[in-house]
Image (tube, rainbow, N blue to C red; front, side, top):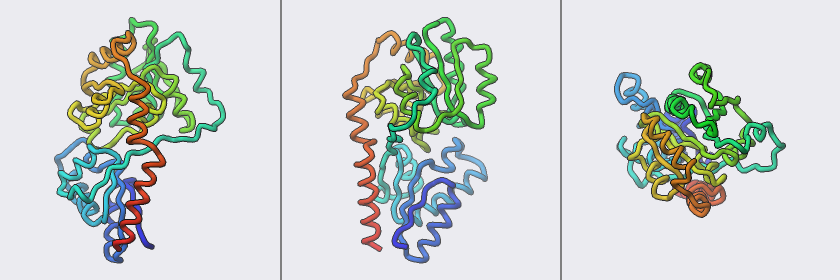
Length: 294
């Protein structure tokens, strides 16, 4: 083996034992952080956090090089004492196979409605509460529909929360090949996370939303690099994760055309950060350098 490539899924202990083995065998390790554990738990106290963080730092130190999928994750790793020059940021690109059979997704979208869509994992980190609270605040807007598409551990809880809401629809998880069609047909795509989660994970749907050239509303911490990326490049709006009234205002600003976003802005950021060919080349270049040094 000339190089070991290990990702953060399974988390922490897997990467720790792989990097420890590789170090003994003098094999370079490229550690790719998709989700940063235990930071993604949203807690920074307690025995479990300290134990997981201890082994995470060991895995990071034992690795030859680290690749993260966002600058927010990189900054968190630096806070753990890892040198900046050991870390590169390479964003995840979108699913690109457009040659898939037609799906039932098209039937979800009626042209007479304005669709505010959340598509993705319905879990503990994804902050379904702000969307449901906002939907309740906007029940009087008959032309605006909230659409949830996905599955996850909080699915049943979500279905309980939206029961009786006429302006909310739910559709089960679809094949990844249909995701682009969803983002493209939606009027607004929601990216919602609980507070501080953005510093340990990066929403993979960002690249697909950009490719679809549709505005995003991100409910994330305002001081994150991710929020700065959206605001500075005019590709969407940012709302505090605890502010359903703020989410309502953002939706209405886009619905009433009080704000506008250009296709050129979407294209520019997509090509700069999420282009598959460019980002694959970055991976290959890093792998070659690691092998040459070993």
